[in-house]
Length: 236
Image (tube, rainbow, N blue to C red):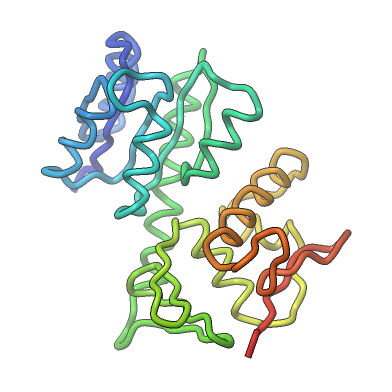
């Protein structure tokens, strides 16, 4: 079955260009020209990946990503002329999986789409429960594979796909220090180059702390080991 890609951009020429190249690769293409239209399509269609512009009317790209991530874990690639570091960090922090600046090479977009779909498929295969869903419990934090969420006491904490992968790695060996390279290559399934990858990891660790910690500025669970990386610590 062909994978379905939703292109969300308020510039019709961009949507048309991307659609032509992706259709040549046998993808099924859906189009939206603002965030509101995109949400309406998502409600009635099964989407495998989204290409999202940031600056759009009605609901912008940031708002759209945030809403989608509340319920879905599909790959999201931002394609935007807003390519300052802060724009990238904010988009990735909200749950996007990749960022492509405009102007772009359509062939690069195809390559990144294919990479994200491979990773998504591989991750679903790895995480499909054979009998019961995988639960990782460390202290009072329980990681639930079946819902891609964490539980802290009676509170359920939704996680993005990347947040889940990071937490799964850290909680698999409590007390063990994982380097940024190990975290990036496990969570993003990609080669670690440092620099921008470090900033991306820092953003996602910060988001996890906001969700798990009583005081994110003084974390009790996810500890920074200066010069080395991070570790997860049980509080019980």
